[in-house]
Amino acid sequence: MGSFSIWHWLIVLVVVLLLFGRGKIPELMGDVAKGIKNFKKGMTDEDAASADKTIDGNTVEHKSDEVR
Image 1 (tube, one colour):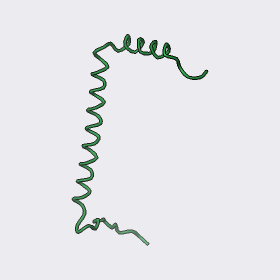
Image 2 (cartoon, rainbow, N blue to C red):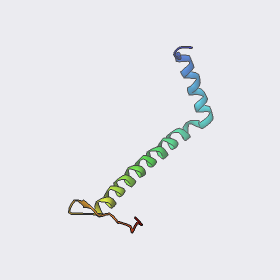
Image 3 (cartoon, rainbow, N blue to C red):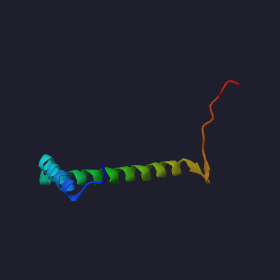
Image 4 (cartoon, helix red, strand yellow):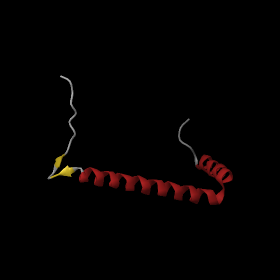
């Protein structure tokens, strides 16, 4: 049960190519890259939004009226 030989990897590669075809794999990788770019953009937008909520380096927080 150890590591896989080169023949195992070749068989896996052939099966993947048969299932997805040659054109689908680059298309799939492009979609993954777009997803990563959108994630990074969302993270920077979130950082910019949180920076807008700060005044003079202090975070502005809303304090609710709690019953004590």
